[in-house]
Image 1 (spheres, rainbow, N blue to C red):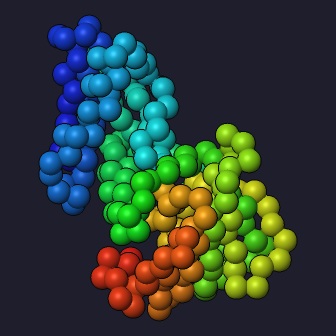
Image 2: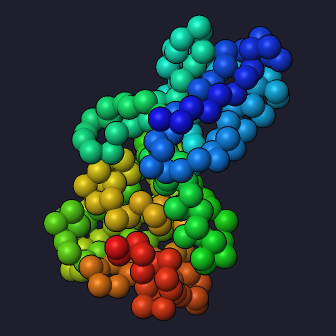
Length: 210
């Protein structure tokens, strides 16, 4: 693991913050520290076991050696949440969601994994699905609605639970209200206010089908 460290103790008498990243993701992620550095410079104090939103993910600050704080992130393979050292998935998702928004020329509107979405009865088992973002009804509502091809019923699920079962939705979660995404194993299409782009002509979207 590569380690990135925000050296805050000497300047602000605040615990240093350490972020570990898998070498599989590459190098050059010092920028992930800027959020913590700017917040501490502005008077914010972070503490152990605090949850901090980074993109759509929530990371936890855990005690580390010499009184430092280390970032841990949720594992994305089980419910309820189990935590693992580092921020590899957090950074990967942040970059992916930003790029999807850039393809549509919109600013990201990040939900959080603790917010809910509405899923149709057979969404989790469907080969094809549609996801649409409506306006949020309250702070716990992401605005996302997830539907199978012939939707029936509906219930609230946390976005974390949805991503654990259907990771295909992850790249699109930061898209804004009024967007719709249709997804199948052969093609994905994103539509927003009269504009659309598809994996048939967009290389980036085609890569998401992998």
